[in-house]
Length: 314
Image 1 (cartoon, helix red, strand yellow):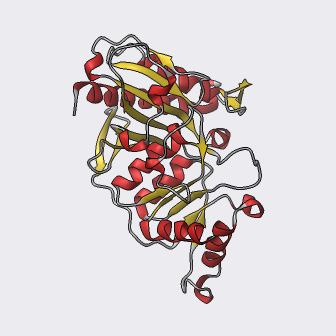
Image 2 (cartoon, one colour; image 1 turned 180 degrees about the vertical axis):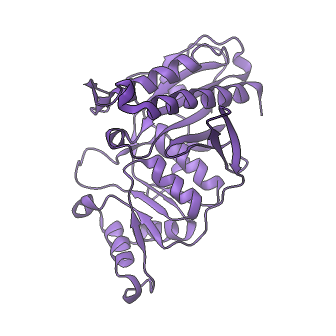
Image 3 (tube, rainbow, N blue to C red; image 1 turned 30 degrees about the vertical axis):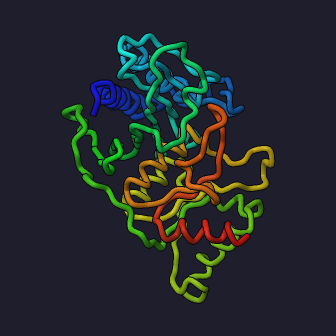
């Protein structure tokens, strides 16, 4: 691992400890509720969205090893002063995934992606628009009953748990691996009437249980945060779907390719699973913009293969 990559991962780990502390204080610190503004996505920002975004920028901006940052909460990328452009990176992040869970004390998290940076010349938005397979590292922090940091540098997936007394992350889940088969899926069923036919077919077959074509019962789960649902998939298998639907026709999907889909797809593939938009592997997509949205289906390989096959037949 290069010094720049190692330094960036250590800084991100340190920042997530600060965010975890803020999340843990909740209303005691007066940080719940909305911030009275919208982000570039047109979504109402929570106070913790803004606080977490500021923490990420403050913690990464002066490392001297990064050329730029991009965040779900910022309109444009942020170029940084870099002392060693020959070994430099770009960091993209969703500072607080699952914002709607903040006020009900449900799981939320931070997602990050690290890309190689170009050396020389002025940094451009196009420098961030790399396919997910070019990520040097990716991961997330989950702020739940315990704070966990899950990451990959392209050599498998490791999970760490924050020891609050020591203030350090300790390796607790080495070599995380997703079972190939599963009897569990996660999807927002309130959007059922807007789903495309392949997803309708898959979910209806799962819900048919023992009497249906799958010949076994399935459990349906939905946490309202991608971090929480993907962590469950990495921990015990399953499939997570946030598919294309017709609820908001101009949007190809709901999740952001660079800040959410790509880092989670790399983690899932490194853990033996698969990630697709229904037609293509997510990590092979060429981004067209910083805030591009895509459909996402990821998790246990056999289930994702089945859903992708239903899309091919449709």
